Length: 414
Ligand code: FES
Ligand SMILES: [Fe+2]
Image (cartoon, rainbow, N blue to C red; front, side, top):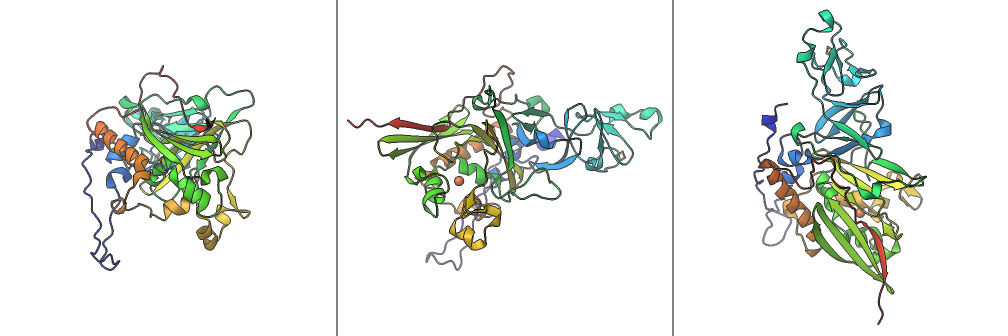
């Protein structure tokens, strides 16, 4: 992979405005188009290169074993495995000899061996042996299997797909640190509406653009409609009250504070967004206190993403399945989904790539506007050779404080 070929240009995408006949008739209407700048995430794409400057979770640690697996992340197919001595490898899958896939490789103590002629590669792509060649390969030091760095934390495997000289420190979040006795990290890799692809069995994929889910982070108003009053109460009755919301930029992203007055109490729900695709959204009950979870919206390719979550908990099953009339989402009929739609129905029905130039954003979309503006600003920073928001190269960087949570305050009745 030639780094020269991967320099993003951040040219503003041309926006096609939909054409609406003066009469308002659907006859003659010409649809709009997706925001190309924010939805194209492959190598060399401006947003793809921005997202590559951050560590992305790619699998649960427990799922990474000596059996090689294919994964897809940011439009790239890669092979993921754990060596016998515990190191995680993430390699370009086509063997540097003659292209057989390392998916069929055999993992040993320190390397993966290709099934075809046995070339062995360690987790940084060094070729350790070429058994069909004299002296186990006289030019083996001259070949390298393309590789990516990985790190494990909070029960997840993180990968860094950007330029090696720009690799930031993997961030820590205070709500996931210093577990109390009996607590552990519970993880979930998938997301609402995810399906398992036979080829990429390790990573379920949700079949629409990452941006549609990322938008949802700073959209506290839909909780009042979609989840509380449109059909049944999907979360908690308190959310049926329309909130007043304050969106603010923070040093590493933004936050939404949704306030509701419940009798003589003010209920504040704080959602934290850490640029570019990390969030802390409090759980769906209204228990008092700080949030216990962080999640990432990781693009699989332009039209799929996977949501990766981790929570601190003392009880297993924190990401329980939501049920409607006793049925899990996958068991509901089409009519039942119409009667009680959820995030998947709302977001997937906008299309695998929503037509952003058709949107009419209102005051309730201020958080989304802020977030998309930050993405465009930071795409330009990367294109100009800078380091984007929130990246740190200091191993001693402070743990990130997460303000998210549910907080109650008695109202002064005087
Ligand atoms: S193709 Fe991999 S060792 Fe020959
Ligand atoms: Fe939602």
